[in-house]
Length: 439
Ligand code: ATP
Ligand code: MG
Ligand code: MG
Ligand code: MG
Image (cartoon, rainbow, N blue to C red; front, side, top):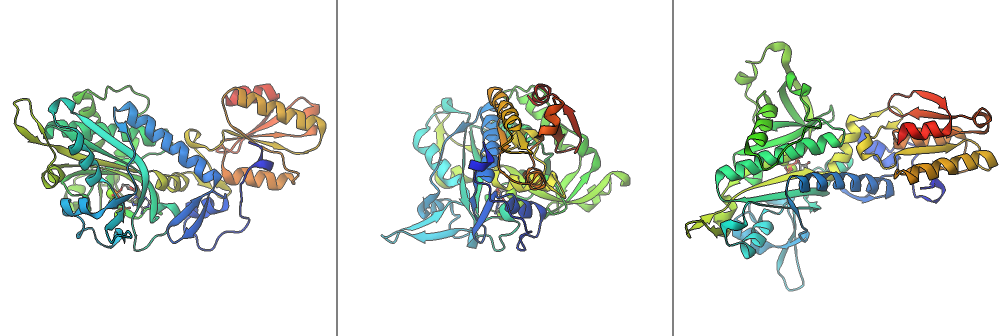
């Protein structure tokens, strides 16, 4: 992409409405624009990162054997009356009526609708296990939308639902989700710690939240510092293996890690004092097992191996895809702007032409641009007639992992400058070598 033809409305001034750094940087980097409280337009740069996160979530869900589909955002209230949640859900649910006076709502989550699809089409134990999921906009009329996309009212969420014949099978699905979530967050350059949590309006008593540690997090968390040494890494896992998934769950949940809702001071105090940590965290996902709560209420049963009907055991599993943009920036930035982890960066490398219009500099930039494109990477070429300082500031703000600076003086010596956004270190080297280092 050439910056002269892109739409990147960066702000020079710090927007006064933003209280935390990720919100401020997303506004300044031209990623989002607020349309009304907690509702955002996703400008091209923000949309690009959102898509990258979404792709990672899809890839990891599909790897775990889960099946993507898509539900409507608007639902009929009738299904929610059937499950018994319509009255209880409260003011976070945005309710409306269509022209015929029928009660509708904008989905805050979708247990009812997935259960409805399931019961309409699945009749036999032979079709199990089954996990269906979607990545779709949700709406919750949050009392205090704030912190930009971190607590929006409209937000983008992956929500998945497992349907199993027994509690045992459903707990395997739970473990499988935990493993796939660990992989997902690590690919985004994040450490998200599974913590014992409270199940809230979804129901059930088996649940973990995934939290990214950050001062600006809204949850208070308590954990054993040893847990931050764990990483899933690039190990191979067979998602069908009950033992393997169980082992990962045990490894990642055996140390104390809880949110304030389930915190137990006596248990916490059993950890050696030097390992006790109290901090703030951002909830980026949650998994639940809730048994037959919905299948009982909505009559979702299949025929078991002995011909008798069996109530389905279910769980649901969410990842806050749009909130993750904020969480990643909270975890990865400096005073000059965002520092994108490689796996989610909107462009792989920025090319800065110090003297636009200079024949040699222009040609060298074009050649670099072509080399990156040919290698399957996406460069962002700042080809505007602007001062170098302004170009650098923009590149630092939008946080691409690499910057290549091209100018007539360097080219006389056959070199360009390669700068790492994370370390700030620069080196001069021939253009071909700079390309080699990045691809
Ligand atoms: P919170 O405690 O932050 O209100 P929640 O527990 O109500 O979140 P879940 O029902 O567990 O949310 O939804 C799954 C995920 O969706 C959450 O882990 C979070 O990452 C994301 N999410 C929930 N509410 C919002 C919101 N208002 N804005 C952005 N993301 C959200
Ligand atoms: Mg909530
Ligand atoms: Mg929560
Ligand atoms: Mg939650």
